[in-house]
Image 1 (cartoon, rainbow, N blue to C red):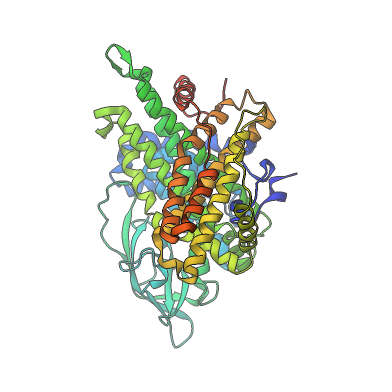
Image 2: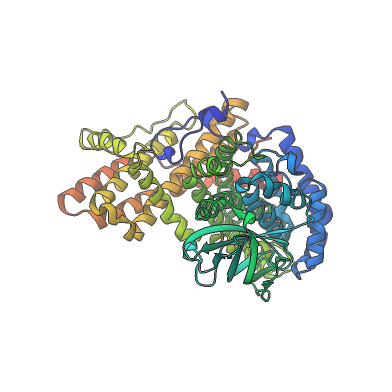
Length: 598
């Protein structure tokens, strides 16, 4: 049975138990995908890393030159169909490029903006004529792309854009006016994907060329991080755009914008994995070189604890992100990208919007944690720009703002779940009714005694966590009904619970899948990291649940609910100090992130 045959609906993970065969994991990479990863690493090590300092000084010519070299190797055309000059490879292959190219520093942002949000609108939502005109040059790097959604007065509120498009009297061109803000690659891009409202109402997407009269850019922004990437405003003054450069139909721009953001959120997660692995490697190598009190600091338990925590977060991030990548690949593989697949593609990508937002939030915050600990392990040297960990730290911060802020994504996660329940796409209400009967009846304590089955206790804990979320979420919905969107603190807590449950389940399924294939001994490090993560975040679930219930209930009802919570969050404590020391030992021995036991 293949992963594609068992792909669940978006958000279904919160309602039902998942199977190890329903997820894609890094252990599923095939030889071709691993070869692409190696080629990307070699390109970065040989061509980009030696010039990182020049790139950070905003050397446009060098960046464009390197992008074109990447194009010669096929690193720009992975998602572009062969008929239009690309390789037409799977989404996991393009993900691996994104993971490994991050060691190029700011270059990775220029690359990602071009191959991702810049090119994918044409790949996925363009018609055959638009694809034939633009994709061959974008695949080689002859032309560079940029994505223009944000405006000075509309960031997360994308549909509040003020840029306008008016059809001229001849009906041959749309005349665009407005300003786009924070546009990556603006300083050297040739093709811009621009969003504007036709007649001030119909939110639409256009392909705009740099050479069109009236197109200009403002000055470079001076940024905290990603200093080697170009970030400028795009200014449109009476720009005449041919009607054939409209992507889709008038008023369909939201389908393009939101689904490109969905993919962007996933790809951000992939980049965060690569940056986290890089930070772990730098930190462990430094910890083995640096001596204090006549011993390597890697021997200090508190340093080991940091390294273990860094590895655990990265393992979980890798598990949930590539699990989601498997869903994206399954959704997209049946679409013929040589044709016009606008509506089919929009529907396919939108299906796992909840999971893409989860990836974005978890990955960006995991990387911030890893980068921060990496700097701390370096001590004072971590604050010095000569050490790459300093750049990783600065560059990581933008990820919590990119592709919709983490706050907006946190509101989207439970909001989308509830909306799908109302549409009948997920049996949420039916599940709530069944659970209510179970919880109000006799409820024995969960048996967490030792079992011969691998990760049996954690599996039971996960089942309880899902019940906890459904009970708490159902209580909140029952109280606030349609007005729940105003209760942002409650939605944030529900979102945190969903994110954590998806993370717990992804780690659990990955470790079990590895053990089923390679044996429990080979999976021991993954099992240890999974168990440690369960212990680490379990109390958070209880805290979020209690906060919501106290805000939504009172009296005897609240006391009953809190007693149910106490039963659901029961756990068997384990010695995480010893567990993390063992995890750290494996990482320090390898001098890099690893999930295998040799």
